[in-house]
Length: 477
Image (cartoon, rainbow, N blue to C red; front, side, top):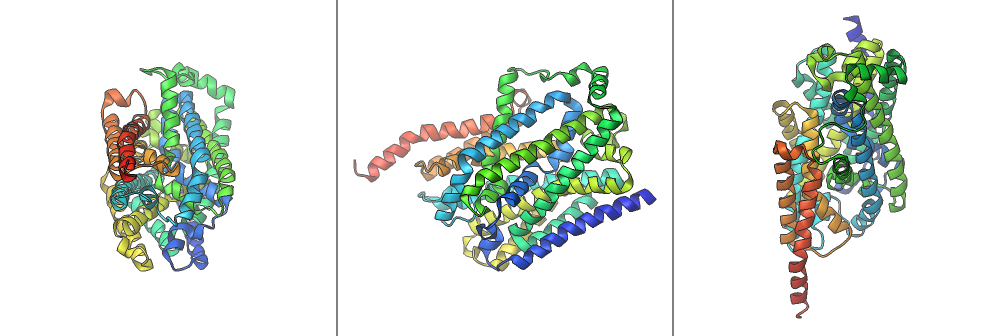
């Protein structure tokens, strides 16, 4: 009981820190929607980078990714490398131009950006906003589930308690300071994520006897755990790796991350933010991989809480760390989940109040009411939806990437497009991703982002014939 009290004290202290930072950010705010949604486009590159990293990695890092490494072994490294490469390429090619165009056109939301300068703009904006709310809402729910899993493992609570606690904290600082509060708290949370993961990795490696001993013990458990080539790849390694690169590139369809590039203080600082983000992300990703591997040596499947591989990290923390540091690890998990959930809730709120109901676009109070509405929807999904964090996150990520990613690229490159082609791109992309994800024979071949985005891109290429005809007709040719 004494240990649980110390864990609770440490955890609550960090939660109060996050909430305090969020509330303090409200002292810098202006009571208008532009500040609430984009922080006046004044965010420095360090905050942009760390916020994008913590928002992008989410509870998947601490819960799903550690569990994946526990089950798959060293071969899960290709997921991390492929994802990072795809992410880097997307930031390198598109995000600086996004920052420039969004300011030139005075666009405050991702759905508004996707529909700009196109006949039928409202239809494109509304459909992309509905997709954002549906899938980003499910994604945010997965974050609350991830944090709740960790609390349940430590305190033996019902899942619903952790979900409700996370929701309350997110609402407090989102409601007080909008995206500025989200970015500021994300930055603090990113630092805690990095520190807590490295701490547990070092201690668990020492407990295993070092890297060499870890490797030997993994080999004894199952030689496949130290095989760099993943087992059972129907199409071979290259398509597998390209699939995870496409997954990282799928950041171009994630409104909660895209909006951070829109909020940076200068387009010239996007490259700096990109480099910081990728480096920080690689540190946390490789730390989670290492924790999953050490967990496989130190914890048999029967020793895991609820026999759930997604609870390797809290199980290790309970076994290896003093109570106060277990509280730190728990805060790290919650940091990852809340840094993503708050961003996603704000993006959904923006889609609802700016894009679907533009008559309320400049009402500061209605925008905040939209945040509460979206939070309530996310809470219901988290309480009654699927409890697999890895499945929920990878499913929502692929759906958003496939639906919005190809259209985002077209808009950044400022290529001609009409409303019909844009709508079919989004529809075909999302249908392809859903079919691929839900068909076992297909989902085993390659991650669904690649076929989903390819389908949307193919529609655009076919649609060029119709777009050219429209342009010729408009010129009277």
